[in-house]
Amino acid sequence: EDQVTQSPEALRLQEGESSSLNCSYTVSGLRGLFWYRQDPGKGPEFLFTLYSAGEEKEKERLKATLTKKESFLHITAPKPEDSATYLCAVVGDFGNEKLTFGTGTRLTIIP
Amino acid sequence: DGGITQSPKYLFRKEGQNVTLSCEQNLNHDAMYWYRQDPGQGLRLIYYSQIVNDFQKGDIAEGYSVSREKKESFPLTVTSAQKNPTAFYLCASSNMVHRPQHFGDGTRLSIL
Image: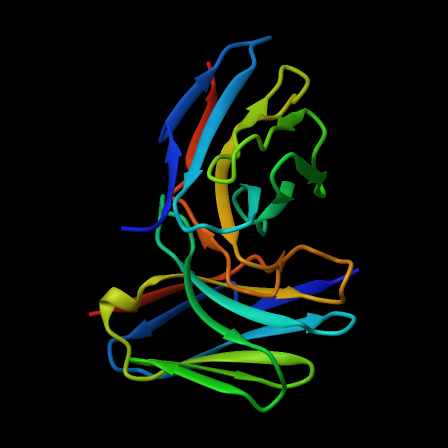
C-alpha cells in the first residue's frame, strides 16, 4: 500500500526566513509526485509534478525536488501570502489509478 | 475560464435524509474524483470515474453513491447509511491519473 508522510505538521517562520518541507513516500513504481497548496475553506491548488529522482521544479519562491524516497518543498524568503497548508501526493504502479495524499504541513509566515 | 464548479458551498443534512453534491467541469477531462477531507487526515478517495458510465469505489465508498452520465458531471449522493457525513467534500478532475488533478472549492456538509 502506498504511503505518504509529511513533516513537520506545522511550521512558523518569520518573513524572509527560508526553510524546507518534507514529503517521505513509499510506493511501488512511482509514476508521479504532486505538490499542492490549500488555503482555508478552499480546494487544493496544483503547484508541481515531479516524475523521476533528480528532477527539480521552481515557481517564484518555491522549489520542489525529488529523490527515490522523499521530496522537499523549499521556500526561499517567504512572504505572509505564502501561508497555507502544503499537501504532497503520489501515484504508483499501473493498475493503481488513484493518488495517495499526506496530511499536509501547515505553514504560517509571520510579518 | 476553465475549471471545476462544486455546489452548494454549504449543505445541511437531516437524520435519514439523502443529499446530493454537484460537481461540474469544463476542462474536457476524462477522469473525475470525489474526496473527503477531515481535520488532521489526508484526502481520502470516495469514488472515481475514468470514463462516462463507469466508476469505481475508492477507499471509503460505504454510504455514498455516484453517477457519471455526462463527461462534465459527477454528482455524489451522501446516503442515510453514511453515519458520519460531516466533512469537507472535494471534487477533482484530470486527463490521466499521473497528470495533475484540478480541484473545485469544496462543499462543507454538516448535520442538523
